[in-house]
Image (cartoon, rainbow, N blue to C red; front, side, top):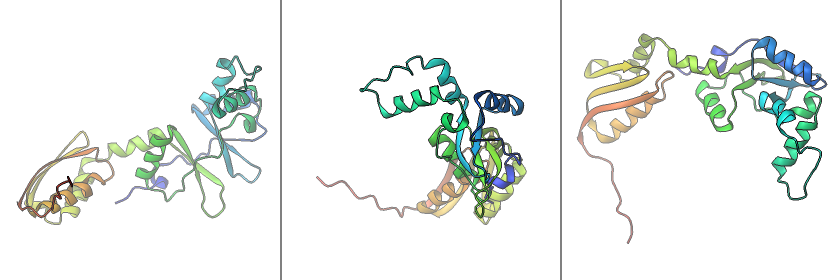
Amino acid sequence: MTIEVKDIMGRVAIAVLQEASFTEIVDAMKRYAVGAVTVIDAERRPVGVVSEEDLLLKEVDTARHSVSMYESRKQREDHEKAAGVTAAQLMTSPAITVTPETAVRDAARMMRDRHIKQLPVVDPATGHVVGTLHQQDVLRVFTRPIAEIEAEIADLVGKPEAFSIKIEGGIVTIGGKVERKSQVIALVERIRAVEGVVDVVSDLTYDREDILIVPPLL
């Protein structure tokens, strides 16, 4: 079973309009206890995100009034944000979004790769923001009941009585015997893809080596 964003997302879209002031953004973050807000246009489509890091630039960027020709593009952008007073000026754009049908695993990978803690959720048909996916929502996947994970793994292996399966702290230890080594690799990868599984420890054995290892050319 693939858990999708719609299964765990927050149904409240924490958003401000492009004209929102610095203080209005801070107030929204405090009111909803979030570290970022989505910036939307008049049609409720996300155009960017303002994070706490964006707002802090105003405090830490003391050089924003003295621009150097040797600055990097990122430094120039930071100076511009530090001088900003509205959401449109402060935001990081474009907004990185997901849809309700996005797999949670894909959303988690996006958060990790982009170093972001929340994602606006948009309706793929209209582009309107319909909710927010927070990092803590994603982490809830790893607290799935063990019985659910066991049942899903049992369906994957086909003959659960032929295997020993132990789950502790999200780590699955599986033992048993299969015919070929390639089956061991495939089975471990399928179990690792189950939502809520942190890692897999294989105690599987096999009868036949069927993976050809080509020696390097000299």
